[in-house]
Length: 460
Image (cartoon, rainbow, N blue to C red; front, top):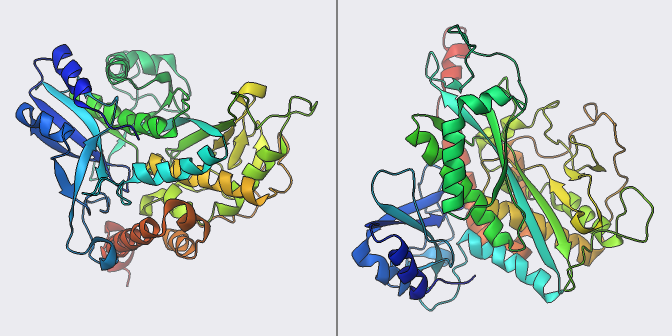
């Protein structure tokens, strides 16, 4: 990771002399930017490494709570780390009325070494494995979300289009509906402008395969850390711009029972030092023309998918997305030009041959998802894993037996038994991640929901 220096700060302040506050964005294990605002008088201190944060700050639940069940040998006494700004991440925050900027910051130990609890450093560890092989991963992300409207009761509902001349809402899926984009043109254009100001390479917007659902894609880059920065910044942009326009947006995996879930799809390819895509076999006449290395990468992803499920689906709501018939994979399948499989090979040429990993929800941490995906690929390549037969185009998978963990507790148990992920992501990180996810799981199930009352209070 390249740390920003004061030259970047000086250039930023010259370009935006009116900015009085800076939001320091620190990604946690949930893929949520924890944030502190600092006054312009403190900008220099951040870039000097004088700004600090508790080492436990990235190790919190979705609710922002820290559980002291994390192994005390790892973070006893909750010592401070220093925060250092990420190069290239300084930008304005256009959706705020106050003159505010932002910068991503990573945790470093007081001695200067990367702090193991920071998810950006977890991904960087995995990338080192590819660097030692002379290979460079290239990834891009696709993120789905809903715009939300208030419901009649305590539950929200999707924000639907209006039928002209009536007070009625537009029903039906209305996939890729131009009128939906026209209705929300001001919001979508503000998202575009914010992406350009914050150097997030947004490429495509569309209304997705559920009422009120949207998808925004980012361009592929040859720095997976940067690609994940883009994904997390895009989520922040969507939510911030929505708030500015009197709307609400959510990246929950399954906010509405009768509609499709929100996914985080990772497109990953691999190139050698000459810029050649090593996933393709130009000498082959097959469709698709796949190299042995590609097959091994798929094999590793299939073999590690269950143990990484707690990363791809990190909370209770995540598992409501895994239902048949919603383009959500239920087994570690792979195939060409097939949207029901976990590991899809999109229609592509030799130079952009890639894997589309379709398992993770939009609620997952993009740094950890990318780390788990790349770990599976590297494991498969180095161990020569074979993926089994490819699913043929047009094959219906609904009747196939689901083999991925379908409940949170099952996924956490598989993660606890994991052998590959600790080797790549770090034993300390996997230990803390498991502890905090178990803590959140227990807290979730300790609550009595409205459904308990609706089903049982009167009947039993």
